[in-house]
Length: 222
Ligand SMILES: C[C@@H](N)C(=O)N[C@H](C)C(=O)O
Ligand SMILES: [Zn+2]
Image (cartoon, rainbow, N blue to C red):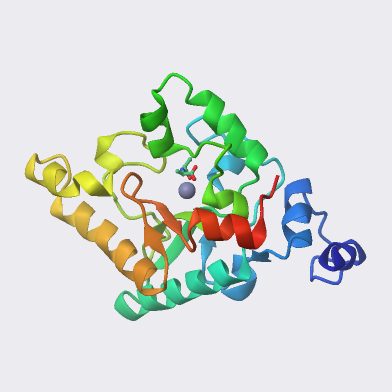
């Protein structure tokens, strides 16, 4: 609440900037703009464009990525670890905190899938996505030209080729190249070293905390 009042007064550093409703909500809940902590991080919120799996801009004016401070600090660490290995590369964030209202839209759009398969790619809003607590991030790595590395699939490719649990088989079948796998492993290495955990079904998704702990600690951002 205090953060919200400060935001209204322009004390957060966004004095001349009109905040989007989602951004206001994030700031009120104590979340932080990841680029304020590390301006070398790149951010392209895919759900603030029509270049996403539902082909709709569901974020409107929101252009900045927000996370709980604990998750943002881990992300900054991961970017530092990446630069130790590859000084010209940087993390490119596609999504951070995501209100549950948006997860509800995604969940409806995947209603053609059986429950298990649906949950592999989009969290059931009844249980909550870890994004809904500001504790998950979707991201890739950008090279020295700012171009995303080839990870074998695009972001939000909902199919087996995107699944870390199938990487060895995909490599063997010639569907994933050694370089694509190396790129994924580089992302995984720096994120895990920084304290994130990966999931078995999406190469781009990382959790800073378990769903249960995030729910108990922060509660839903609706
Ligand atoms: C929709 C996709 N980018 C994603 O974040 N999926 C996970 C499982 C989630 O919804 O939490
Ligand atoms: Zn995600």
